Length: 203
Image (tube, rainbow, N blue to C red):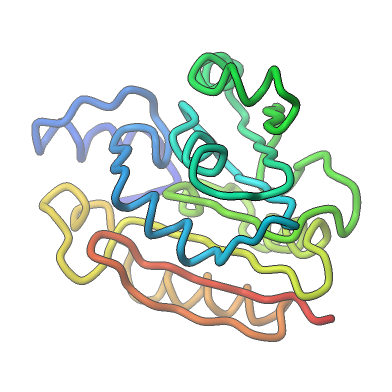
């Protein structure tokens, strides 16, 4: 399967009886337990400025706003439809100014240099057209000592659908190596249904 092609993602989902809400990443299976695990992996504090890449309908954005003390929460997503949905799901936090949702991509976030402490991407790394350019961009916007958390379908106990969407080991190693080319400390571990990479920018 070419995981970069959204048509292939939809095809896999149809074979397993799942209808995708949209074509990309986290948007067809928003599991709150998974998102909570991502929050824990990000190790957020009350002084952190956070960026989510590919926020989809805004499930993780909402958890960030409700369950963390992050100072500010920003998101970029290429879809105007998803921005509208995420805005509706996070209306209160957006109005309060704590959450800001913009159009953008992993390789073109539109953020200033060294402007966030944590970057999170859930279930969309495999559809980034240019992995190296995206990782370079995330390194650029992360502050010294900042952490990037990237997750994709996989894990220790994947469902049929998740297993069908998981990446080959060669692709996982390519993601890990690309992160190592930019960051000083890179780790890789598995949750129940996700493969998770963490990368820390040098101070």
